[in-house]
Image 1 (cartoon, rainbow, N blue to C red):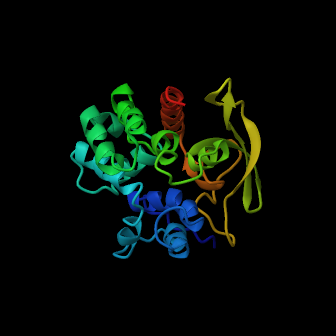
Image 2: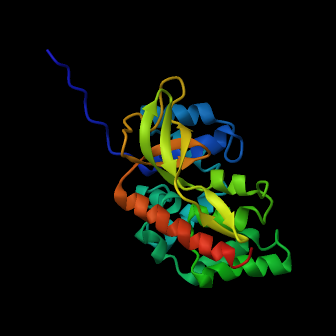
Amino acid sequence: MIELQAPLAPLTGSLRFVRYAFMPNKLRYCGGDEHRTLFQYGTERVVDGGLNPLLRKFSGALPYLQLIARSNGIQDPFDDRVVEAYWLGNELLAGVEVRQLHDSLNERFGKQLQRRTRAWVLAKAPAGARPHHNFHVFDVHSRVGELENTLETMDQCRVSWGRVARVDGSELVVERSPLVLADGKLTLGPPATMRAVRQIDGRGFADAAEPGDWVSLHWGWVCEVIDPRQQANLERFTRDHIRLANQTL
C-alpha cells in the first residue's frame, strides 16, 4: 500500500523571511547568532512563539518591513505579503509614499552619513526608490559601513534569481545574470552558469527544485523556488534600483 505524504502547510511570512535571512545570519552579517535554530525552523516549517523574537533581531530589515506594513494598513510586519514585498517585490511597495520612505531613511541613517552622502541617499525616495532589499544593498549599506563596498559583495548580498539547469547533490547548477561594471556603471551581465548551495546535511528550503524552475538566491544559498510573477517582480525592482544607484556612483 502506497503511503501518501500530507501536503505541506502554506508558507507563512515568518518562514519566508527565514529562507532569505538564514545565510547572511550564518555568515554573521545580520541578526543574532542563531543560524542553526533558524535553519531548523525553516526546514521543519514550524512557527511558534520563539520564532518572531529571533526575526526581530534583524535590525537592518525590520524597519523596512514595518514601513511597508504600516503604509499598507497591515498590522504584522512578518505578514507574507510584506515579507515578499521586501525580499522579492510586489504591489505593496507602491503603497509606501515618497515622504514615508524619505523620513524613514532620514531617521535611520541621517546621523550616520555626511551631508553630501545623506542628500544622495534621501534623494533616492523622490527618484523612485522603494523599500526593497536590493535598494538597501545598492544605495544604503555601502554608505553606512555595514559591509565592504565591493562589486562581489553587492552581487552576493542582493537577492537574485536563476534558472535551474540541473540538480547536483547538495547544489544546484543555475543560469544567473551577475552584477558587473560596464563603462563605470552597474548592470546585469549575460546569464552565466554558477553553482548554488541548496542543502546542508541533506536538508534545505528548495528540496523540490527541478531543472527549468526559477529559484531565488542570497549569498550563494538557494532560498526558495519562485514562480514567474515573483521572478518578474524581482528582476523589475532589481533593474530599477540599479538604475537609481548609477545616478550617484
